[in-house]
Length: 305
Image 1 (cartoon, rainbow, N blue to C red):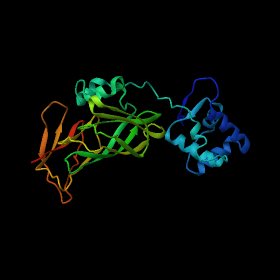
Image 2 (spheres, rainbow, N blue to C red):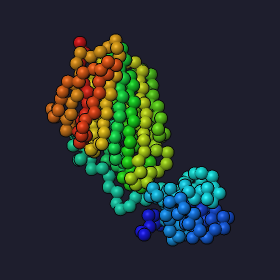
Image 3 (cartoon, rainbow, N blue to C red):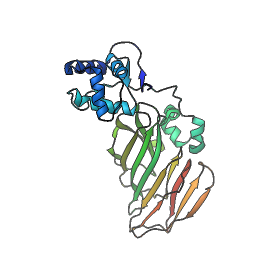
Image 4 (cartoon, rainbow, N blue to C red):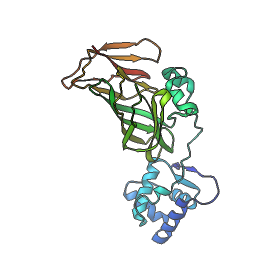
């Protein structure tokens, strides 16, 4: 069977290789026996692969190889996470190209606020992940202003070694106090506020590198203090086809809109391709969940008396 590792350039041995080799030596079992123990758990790894790992000639990268690493740790008397924590950066298979800015501009528009917020990083905007599904809950206060946006997304790594996603939010107004981002699934590793664009940019880490095709859940809530701005819509720009997009907007019972509409546009700056009325439910909320989610701009907009 073909090897599921990528080769590492020669040079100083990695901590992973040294730790694995020492643990194998202490355990005193031949590699054939180790492979047999793994096979009993339904994990197939060849003797040659284990030999390459302990010599530093290659490192585990794909999902099934990382599962083998997890199973090796108790087998070799190591604490959980010992070997995983020593893995170096994953090396993408083949050439990894940056996101085509022209394709992204097909949805975001020329010199969009997203491109301005990210600068040169726009060409690499979440290039190593693909968004599979997303659920957003937007909550307004009695002043008719959006105060909270809760997001749960599922992403898939398209290359080995994907480590984080970048999220960009634009506010109707910046509050006098700070903007808070509470991450429930993942770890925020960077955040900046751009007053000129009234935007917040944050990097949310998965906690470890993902193997290609591995999925991760990212969950966070953006909260802002009170402002004088009146919110009239919420939209999501989707670059790639999604399996599911669900938008839920909650209105304060003392500030209900007169009308609410769902709209879909293929890109910014064009008339909606689809637009229809959405009625509020008994909990004073409106939602959208398209049957299909091709790239484009999805949103709910509302009118106040």
